[in-house]
Image (cartoon, rainbow over the protein chains, first blue to last red):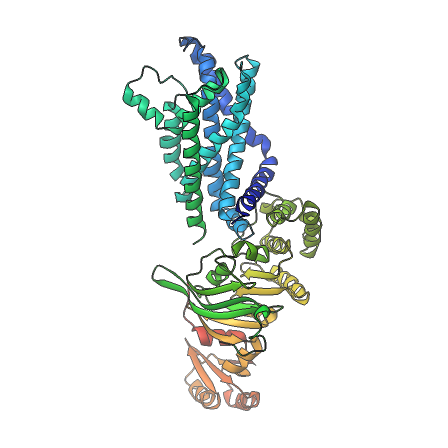
Length: 258
Length: 316
């Protein structure tokens, strides 16, 4: 057991490399999905809708919305990868079966796939951050920390998608996930409107959504850098991420090794 | 039990050792208390109808299915505690196509070699060697979906060999292939056998078992019903020759009676009658009295053994 973390990380990296190799050949098509959708949201909501919205906390609506979209993009990208992508590898393609018959373990496959999903999150988030930089919306050097945060968000929702994949009988089962789980985070996780001024029950409901904490952190990093209260949200995010990761790993093992 | 052989006392001669190995799903036993060994350098075959427990047994060896009860050691290590080490030394050809459809032929081998921790240079060298060995040189940059079934199976074989495994496990390696493709796979497996690779394979093709396997275990309903060399099994359970008749008319009754009297064992299946002979001379002596009857006189085969031991009813 002493070699456990080392072996585990090495195995996960090898699975990550497999995902990268298979993505590389179709990168252009994949990039369109990863990058184009958040850009369209950014333009439609930020510039289009934003013209009719009053400044929020002294910020233009575009400046308010942008960090929320960074967090939401990280979520969507990873969740998509570990549901439709991982489910295909788990079932139709028997990719997991082939890998688990090599020295790689189930936990390493799950980790490698989730880390890959999170890497795509960083890519998607990075594109929006680059646009924000070009528009002069990034003022603090803490904005660089948005990239590792996007990775953590990717791991969290990648793991959540993976857990759903482990339980999914078919592709249609993911409709529930994207409508009820991911959709709820996207609409009520503080991406589009601030929580201040909402009824108490609505605020507490929002704080039950992991994305709300992620959006809060992202907004703080992009705007003014860390402040004391942030560590609570970071801790919440960290604990949820690790817990879901462990659950996902366990569920996939139960489904794969009978 | 085939204990008492010369290897039985040497623990290092057996690469796989199963004792009382069982597995059930719910109340249904799939593998029901089997004992066997795979010895270094041999090709051992699991022969059995669908649902006999062949694949489940193989999957327990490759650590893909958990052992239900009993003990299973591979390379002297328990599958429960030594999975990573065991898998490092195994090459597996699964029944399902598990090639990576997102990667080209060559990348399938490279990426797979990386799972075993092979350095890049060695992966490249081994891939080139193996693609030549399975005659897929020209397809190196093709995508998996553009390969025929036979090519996919050969590529799967090459992939299983990338880590130079000490034991090659093949689950129905030629099922679903046309005769040409099947013979090419057999050719490759015979070449590996000559090179000293230890093999464990499952099959329900008698010809495959006869051509490739040194020893066979016949499985039925999760149990081993017979074991031995292909020739030994035929001699023990059937004899030397078979007269297979298709009686039609009333007048055939006398001929069938003569067959029944002369044969060591007679079996009826539908409207066919089989007479099994240990002594070829006895079979030949009978032939004149079968005139008018539609029949085939032939050597006993493994298929006769298989059908005698596992019955003739359909298995789905």
